[in-house]
Image (cartoon, rainbow, N blue to C red; front, side, top):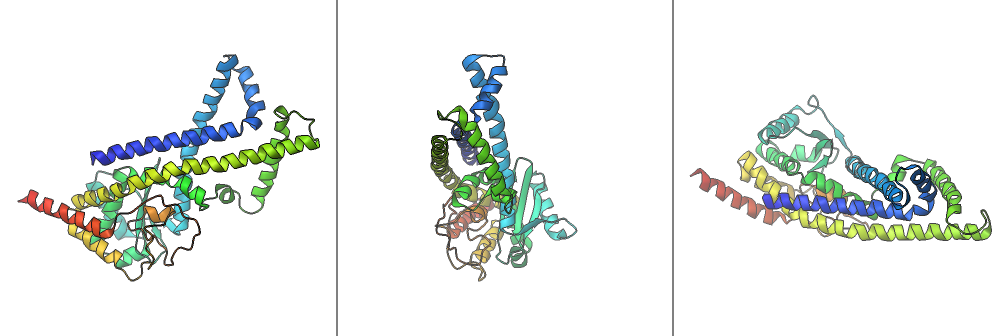
Amino acid sequence: MRTLTRRILRTLLLLLAIDVAVVATAAVLLTPWLAPVRDAVAARLPFGGASARIAWWVAILIPALVAFVWAQLRYTRAQTMAEVDARVVGPEEYPDLHERVQRLAQLADLTPPQIAVADADVPNSFALGTLGGATVVVSEGLLSTLAGEELDAVLAHELMHIANRDATVMTLASFLPSLTNGEYDPLADLLPGGSRYALGLVALGLAYVCSARVLDAPFGSLSFTLGFLFLFAVTVLFGGVALGVFTAPVVVLGRSLSRAREFAADRSAAQLTGDPTALVAALETLDGDDDRPAADKRAAYAGVRGLCFLPHGFDTAASTDSLSIETRSHPATAERIERLQSVERSLETASV
């Protein structure tokens, strides 16, 4: 477990470093249009010269980084919940489910997470972590397929993802790959319809005006306009390339953590419930369920599927995506069962 904790911490620090690089790159690419504002603010800072410019970048980068991390976690949670048509439910609607989660969370010394139910027949579950708390999502199919100790075992597995903090790290790691895949479009989600195009035109107009500080041509002339279009195209091109470059290490980090986190959550859940055979039975039931997708998506899946208890996600149809970046790699169910049987033997030995 200590090895996993170190790996999670190392992954989190590297993810934050990548976020710093993303924010800094965006700031550099936007420098031609931020220059007038930067110079005006720098002139009023009590530093002077290069110190004023450094203070400006610190004042911009730190709040931007905090906002970027917060937005990633909040947006990823909302989009993931929407993708599986999940809604937060209360104890009056699902009393048995809430009682189980409350009891298991108390055993694990955890603050009980929010509980959401996905309107999906495929039996599966996952946990999401944010700065303000966590959410365990289960499908209607899971609740109708499992009961008793097997359901407790799966819920304990998800709670262990929260306890280990890997739910938050993996939620954070989901953002850039999903953005690169085209699964996430924050601007379209925040500004539906034609409003985002109107905002885009306004932003383009402001950028055109601000370009007068960096383009050596009469404002509004053909040469000025061509220079602006070239500068804009270079910014978009390098922005896209940079996004791809920064996504690559996130994918590697996510995949390196994924297998370890699943094994650790399995082991911790078995120890929490004291019944590894219940989790083995749940894995055998769910992995062999006739309703699960026939296509094995271990080799190509992204978004919510990588967060799930089993890698087929909540979809009943095979994936037809032309582009899919694999951010996580679930261990094979047979390997998970073999390790759980080892945990069972160790518990039996300890009880003798």
